[in-house]
Structures are given as C-alpha cells and as structure tokens.
Image (cartoon, rainbow, N blue to C red; front, top):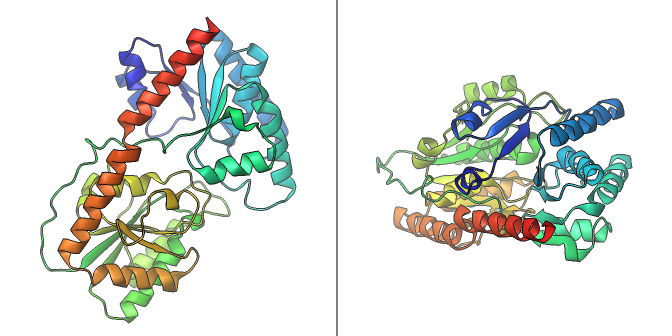
Length: 353
C-alpha cells in the first residue's frame, strides 16, 4: 500500500478496526472501518455487509480492488460485479471451509463460484489451494495465478547475531492462539523433551483469538506456563526481538495455510525452522537444509525433530538459518511481490482504459 501511495495512487484500506488501524493514517492511506462477522452464518448480517461494501465503493469512486479472506472475497466480488469495478481475489489460505465436505463447504463453494465469475484473477499462495478451486470447478484455470506468499521485508527482518550463553536452546512458536496452528502438539512435544531432560526452552508468543471452538483460552495457556512446560511471552506487534533471541522457529500447523508469515519472519532472520508436511508450510521447508519437517498432528515426531535440532552444533544451525534466508531472498522477498502487484494493476487498468 505504501508503494502504491509513492506511485501516486489514492489507497483505501477497508477492514474491521483493531490495534493496527491507526497505522494507515500515518502512511496517507485512507482507512474506512467496516464490521464483519467473519465466522458467522447469519445471512441478514451478510446482506447488510454486502450493502455496506457497495455504498463504500460507490461513494469513494473506487477504480480497482484487491479482496482478501473469505467474506470480503465473496461479498466484495459480488459488489464489484454489481458496480462493474475490476477486482482481484487473493486467497491467503482456505481456512476451515474446505476441511470437510459438509453443508458449509457446499454453501461456500457455491458462493465462491457465483461471486468470482467477473473477477479478473484469483491469486493463490500455494498450488494446493489452486487445485482445490479447480477441482471444485469454482474458477477456470486461465483466471488463476500463484503468488509466492504475501512477501516479507528482508531489510526489516534481518539477521541479528545471538549472544552465545551456553544456556538453554530456545524454540519459539509465534502464532494466533488457535488449536489448528499445532499449539497443543507443541506443548505435548515440550513435555516429551522435558521428560528426556533436554536443556531446551519452549516459548510461545501470540494473541488470544476471539472466542470460537478453535480458540485456546488464556487460562489454558497460563496453566502450561505455570506448569513450566512452556514460557508464554504474551503478544507483540514487533516480534523481531523474540525471534532474534531464539534458536529455532517452530510451527506444527495443520491449518489450511497460505504461506505462514511467522516462518518467513524466522527464515528472514536466519533462524532454522521446524514445521509440518502441511499445505502452505511445505512451500518454505527444505527438510535437512533450512530445518526439519515433521508429521502434522504428531507431537512425538515433532519432539524427535526438536531434539534433533537441539543436538546440532551452533555452526550447523547457523548454516540452516543462512539457507532459509537465501530461500526468502530468492522467492519470497516483498520487493518481488510488490513488483507483481504493480505490474498486474497497471496491466488491468491500461486494458480498462
């Protein structure tokens, strides 16, 4: 968005209000707060949301729109179809809607299929998500495009030399506190490592999500902390210092990821990673090269890989970290991602004219 501003575009951010909302104004980005019932199934609320989008797009004479996440993609694309505004839908991961073939999946598939008929392109962050859409005949292949994640600022997330104190090896999981990120598997793996008397510390950094069936409560997190199985660090807007003081970033996710940002942050700061053979995660892990891959939903295998990491010497872990940053610079640096955004926007706007 900042790069679009520098190029002379007027940029609007339309999203629910949160801790980050005040950042837009500082960058001359026009922020419009809009409430969304992200996981709700109340059709009346969704119709009101659609109507709000139509009004916002009309009142601000929007020329082009990028939509993110399920409801903005579906209802935003419907609004653009009604108003004849060109748009691109960016699926940053399939989330829960495609976990199983149930009634919700059928509804979401149908809504996607109807709403995406007039979008210019649908972008995916990995091949698996694209194949799901093609298999469900949601869109034709000529409308698809794969983006290498949403990019990471490698100048912001830069390597910081960690002071060698010969104390505990530090593992760090930074994530939203939801079950599908593999947090309970991480806690159970930490218990296994503790039973093996390994000199390691398992840290957890992240924000408690709004209440849902997938949320891990702060009480449960605090009980793990009190037990001494993990060290809960709370939440933070700037995670760099926590990554810098860690030895390995872990994400045992079994969620329908796009490309996990926390792993990209760790890799960009030259930390080895441990993650699962899961959609999105496999885009980043090169087993034995920049970290280790474990089986999803398997705390025993996760513990084994964490123990394996702990038994490497510092030079071996450092080499893995350097390999990870090299992969970021090659495929996931935000400069390349921003270039794609600009080229696509200019192409579609010039064709519109």
